[in-house]
Image 1 (tube, each protein chain N blue to C red):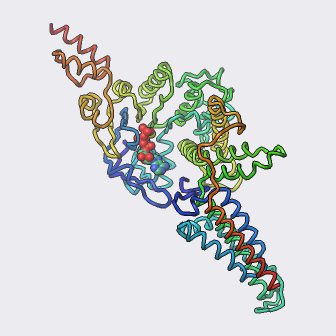
Image 2: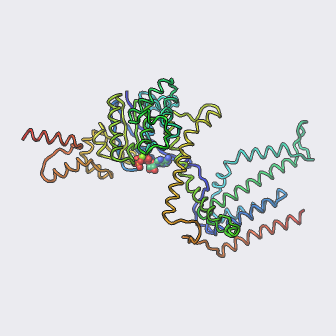
Image 3: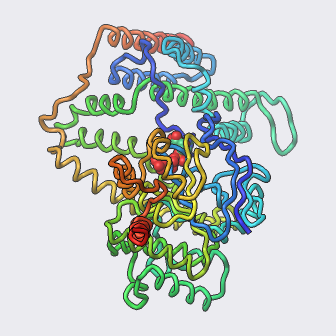
Length: 267
Length: 283
Ligand SMILES: Nc1ncnc2c1ncn2[C@@H]1O[C@H](COP(=O)(O)OP(=O)(O)OP(=O)(O)O)[C@@H](O)[C@H]1O
Ligand SMILES: [Mg+2]
C-alpha cells in the first residue's frame, strides 16, 4: 500500500527542478500542444527530443518514467490492438479473409501508442520535478487572472494541496482499518465481484467517517489560526520568474515553431 | 496449548526494497492463562510483533505457532484469527455498522455461527464491557461517546470469544475511570474464561498491577522477559532503554536511598501494603 506514490516528486537540485512552477506548467501545456500537432509518426521526433532534453537536464533517472508508465501498460496494449484491428487501409500485408492487416493500421497503432506514452511521460516529468506544493502554488498563480470572473483560484489550489497532503494518511488509515476487520474474520479475497464489493463496506464507512472528522478538525485548526481564504495572505515561498524561466520558455516556443514549419513544409 | 514464537525475524518492505529488520530473531512462548505485558520505547516493534500473532503480517514456516497452527499457511491463519482476538489502538475508528449490536455481531457472523449463538454472544459481550443491551443495542455507534465507542469496539472482538486476546494500547486517550473499567474487564474475562491476555501499554503502573509476565522490546529484540517484579527491579536498565518504572518502585528506591531497606521487587501498591504489614508483624 505504501508503495503507491501519487504525484511522485523526486527532490533534486537540477535546473529543471529550480524553474518556476508556472513556467513548468506552461511548458507542459506547450508540450501537449506539440504532441497533438504531430500528424505523421516521424514528427514525434520533435517532442521526443524535447522530452529527452528535459530528462537529461533534470537528471531524473529513466526508471521513474518507466514506473509512471507501468500502471497504463494494459491500456497501451489494448489501444494498440484496437487500432490495429479496426483501422482500414490500402496496403494489405496479410489477408486472413475476415480481416486484413494493413500498413496503415500498423502505423496508426504505433502513432496512437507513441502519443500516449509521450503525454504520460511528459506529465510525469512535471510531477517528478515539481513538489506538490509548488505545483499548486503555480496553478493558483496561473489561474489568478480568472478571479475577475469570480473563479475561486485560491480555494481550488488550497483544496488540491490538502487533498495531496491527505492521500498518504488515508492510505495508512485504510490499511489499519483493513487489518482490524481482517482480525474480525472479514474476507476481502474470495467470492464473486458482488461479494467483494460488499465486503468493502466495513472499510469504506470508517474511512469516510474519519475523513469527515479530519476535514472538520482541519477546518477548525485553520480557522483558529486566522485562515480566512486567500485575501491578503502573504507567502513564505515567493514564486520568482528568472532568466532561466524566460530561456526555458523561449526554447519551448522554438521547438513548437520548428514543428509548425516542418508541418507546413511536408503537408 | 500456547503461542510459540520461534526465531521470528521480520522486515517491512517499501517501494520493493526490504528495510532494516523491525523484529530480530524473537524466540519465546506465551503460555495459556498468562497476562503478558509488552513494553518498549516507541518504534521498538511492539505493534509489529503483535500483528504476527494472528497472521496479519506474514511469517515464515514454523516461526509463529498458535496452538500448533502454523501461521505461514493461509487456512491456518483463518483458524488462528478465531483463536486470537485483536484490539488495535483506537479501535473505535473501525466501527462501521448501523447499530451497536450489528457491529458487535460482525466477527461471529464471519465465523459463520448460528443466529441464536450470535445473539447470545452479542448480549454477553455487551454485558462484559458494561453496555446495557436494551439501551445501546439499537443505537448507531457514531452517536456514542468516545468511551462507549471504545467499549463497543472491544465488545466486537470479545464476541468472537477468543482464547487469546491481544490489545495494543487499549487505554490510550481514556480518562482514569475508563482506564480502570478496561483493566477490570480484562481481569474479569481472565477469571471467567481463562483467556490469555497480551497487552501493549505505556503505563508501567498498569503493567505492574496486572501482568503476570513482562516482555521488554528494544529495537526489535527481547531486552527482558520475566515477572514484573524482576523486570521492574532493574530500574537502571529500563531507564537506559528510555522506559520508566512504576511509581511504587520509585518510592521503594527513594526509601532505600534514605536508609530504609525495602526489596526493589515491590512494584504494586498491594505488594507494598503487604510488606508493611509483614514488617509490623516482625516488629
Ligand atoms: N507499514 C510500515 N512500513 C514500514 N515501516 C513500518 C511500518 N509500520 C511500522 N514501521 C516501522 O517499524 C518500526 C516499529 O514500529 P511499531 O509500530 O511496531 O512500533 P511500536 O513499538 O508499536 O511503537 P509505538 O509505541 O509508537 O506504537 C518503526 O521504526 C516504524 O517506523
Ligand atoms: Mg504501536
